[in-house]
Length: 201
Image (cartoon, rainbow, N blue to C red; front, side):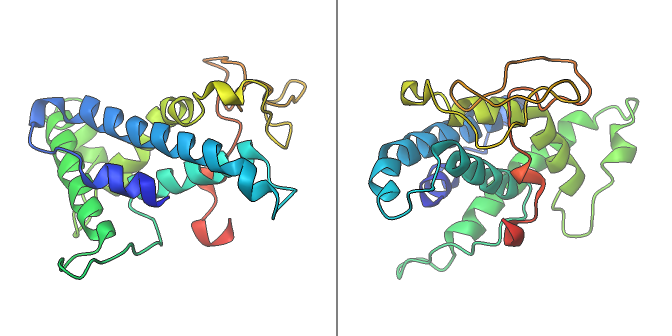
């Protein structure tokens, strides 16, 4: 996930009014590059790990991106000799700036209940807001991660699509058919790895 970190460290956090859209664009761009990298290098690693499936590898990376966005990533990142901060620290600073801007924007006026919901923790991590942002945007991030044409006939290892109806496997680009609105459907994302603690994956 180093590529993802490199892309996200460079995020521009200077424009308050566009923070929500810019953050989604930046995270999706990082996911796009991450997916392309995994798809490109997966065949050569399959020789050493024949049971490895591309959709599973993408799902694990997707979960890592979710942890990064929500401030839960356990990876410390590299520290270059000329720098005094690790990549993760820079990345986390950028995310906090974005989420501070989004927090200020959604709590403006104080009449929509967001002010009460997003009363922040002492370290200003914006944990609830970050969790809500991820839940609202995870399908878009999955689309970006799996948009390669090389994934046209790729399926997920387990039948997770279909909700409480008859379960089925994601058959095209590692995606479930889009059934927006179904209360128990995973939508297009066939995995819940992003809700499993990182040390258990």
